[in-house]
Amino acid sequence: MAVHYRTEGLILKKLDRGEADRIFTVFTRDFGKLKLRAVSERKITSKLRGGLEMFYLSEVEFIQGKIQKTLTDATVQNSHLHVRKDLKKLRVAYRVSEIFDAVVKGQEPDENIWRLLREVFSFLSHEELDEKSIRLVPYYFLWNLLSYAGYKPQFKDMEAQSREMANIVQNFLQGDIVQALQKLQGKDIDGSLLKKISQEYLSRVLGN
Image (tube, rainbow, N blue to C red; front, side):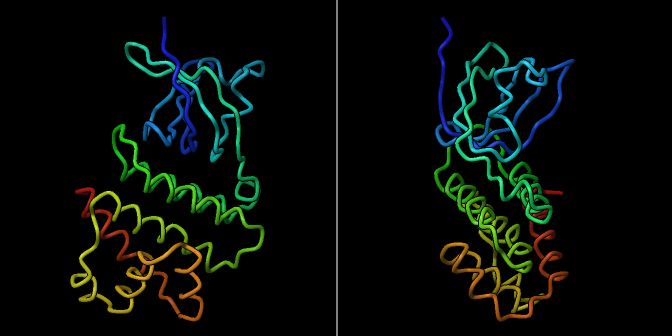
């Protein structure tokens, strides 16, 4: 008899497979990063459709087969509607998903990463956010995720390019996202340089 596993998970990626199946990448609280197959999910009659949209926080149930894990149930807990209906926030959510998928490998639960994802999507769910805060969210996520994954930045190397950028990244790693972004509100941030330094460090970590 198949064992059913149940946990909370944030849906971060989906890929079509075959005529009607989908593969979902879900970061779960109890099992870490999982790839779960939803059989016939793309059919209108599928009972899974209501709980499996991008960036949903859902309670998912799955069984472990010989080769893959198969979803048997999904119930939405938070649809993050204010993220999904705002184009700027939605772009940031997809960027967060891309960063997560690049950095987090394998099936390992991690309470810090779980809290970070929940924190970021909770923040983006606020109805009124200024454009600067929205643009900085992926960088806050990136530097904290790298730190939790064991790749805390070497600030001396970063200061060689820009002491200001090093201070900004240090700020990202102190306190929560609200505190971090509030401290940066009055600063004129060179977005292109922040992007360049972030991409260089991420490429170094990933060995690209």
